[in-house]
Length: 144
Image (tube, rainbow, N blue to C red; front, side, top):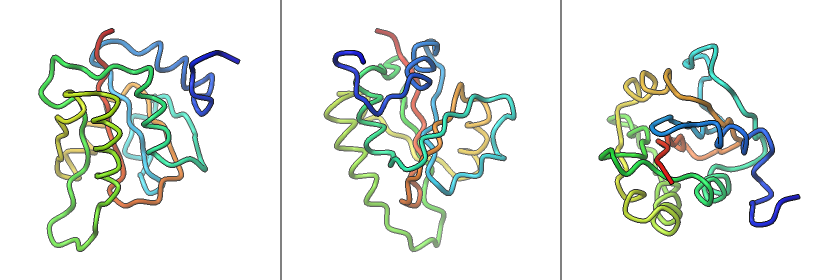
């Protein structure tokens, strides 16, 4: 056990976060995310049974967001005509504002296919049991 480390952060996830360098990206994927869209060599960390908000909160206690880019946080925009509500975004916004400060407020929402294109280059993906639609969130690591 370690002091001050949220217990939800597994040894594998902590090791991965530590190995990541400035500008590397981490995808927190919801339960519907098609893993086949990823580079087959990407590191996948399974966190089935956990939701993204609890993981996001824990990760942001040890993970700095990149303040050298305009949008260190990226999410998939709702497709035109899709009647889906996205209350999970408000939850993310509260967590980001509380733990990441101004960088956490610079969230970009991009088209679904552009999102899939960008996640091909992630350092790692954390797969979750998150049920919220449009719940995927991409974080770009900064410096300490």
